[in-house]
Image 1 (cartoon, rainbow, N blue to C red):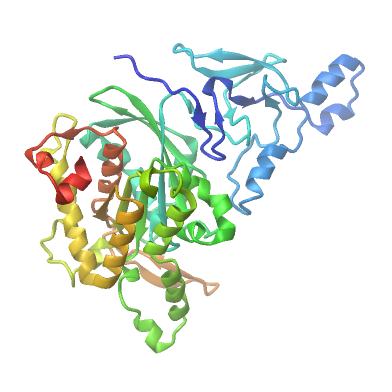
Image 2 (image 1 turned 90 degrees about the vertical axis):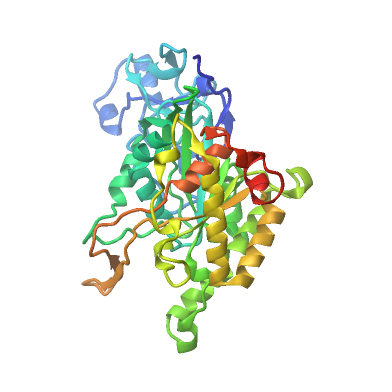
Amino acid sequence: MEMKQATDCKCPFCFQRFSPQKAAFKAMTVFTEQDFSAGINDEAELELKKRYALETDLAYEQFWNQYPGSEPQNEYRDYPVIDNLSDSYVNGKYEADTSGFINRAVDEFGVVTKVRICPYCHNVLPFEFGKYPVKYISVAGITSSGKTVYLSQLLRQIETFFVKAGLTVVGTYDEAERFLDHYKILKDVPLPRGNAADGLMPPLALNVKCNKTQQVYTLVFYDIAGENCVTPDQMEKFGPFIQNSDGILLMIDPGQFLGNPAREKGTEAERKEAEKEAYSPDRVIAAMWNAFVTSDNTEGKSQIPLAVTLSKSDTQTDVLDYRSALFANISYQEYTDNEIPLKAFAATDMEVRRLLAGLNRTKTEILCNKLNECFPVHAFFAVSALNAMPKEQTGENFENYYLLDEDPETIRVEEPIFWILYKLGILQVKETEQKKKRGGLLRRLFE
């Protein structure tokens, strides 16, 4: 089956549109001041080499100046730029792979480069980015809600999860590998801290193929702090990541639905909890809606699929029966023929709604009302990225960190992503009699 290729794509960093066939490259030929100090007698040769001199890439620098302390490791940041559409940069000969996709360039010295970059912000693009349809998925939530740990556990096992649902991972990228290496989740190893509230984690990309249709997609994941969707001065920098999302996973800490005993005791935790309250899930949802979707969508409602995901589900034993499916991993017996059963999503959704109501009925009603008005295409999920209780420790420099004294295990971390991919038309689902029912939850979720 011939696979559909992408046309224009959006840079996963700055979201400027460009043709994948017209991406720029970083030249591998570079000259430094030391090269010029030796003296070059031929004036033409000198002029050519000066164009390949190592110098600050202003476009790249301007992008990362918005996110101090967040710039990724990029050994090519100040290398010369090959962009045949601009007189400001050097020229090169573009070469294509067997499918006609431009994947490398040869500079004027005959040196090959495969480092493709965005022609606008000059960030390095994932390998083959733009060759296939791209889907952007943001994992949003307030700082400490568990986004980073969740993403680490999800991506670490994603090949195993996807193969059970009829998807095959056919390519991961350097940034995802670096992310997993940096954010390790292991017994007796301090749990990684998430990125700073005002920091930007580089996009994490991978290529997946739907086994049933043979279509390949590029999935791009983002870790977005919910605070940056509420604070006005942060909206301009972080808003585009939400605005350009094809799907959103909103992570909620159960603590946002519980009372705050620390507040009564007047401890330092009181201030932290007050900050959580200020960035409650309904406020984050309303801020995203107010900023981006009121004028762009039918009747002022966003059609972006939103998976509302309760983290640390394994801690809710005082609300849920221990036999609840939320305390167990997905049973894959019905995941056959490269398809998934729709009824599984509905069962999880109803169980989580009951859990949230048990935690705090008033807050649950506020959240559900806000979702119905702003993001009607939504469903509820519950996950545990650890299935263990981290213990707070104090380091040699009196800094606090958390440690696991048992091997971590995940519970249902793949389910909200499965639902988003189903809504995006990537994951195939089983047709069931339940889908034919009219009204209520199933109609909202599945039709």
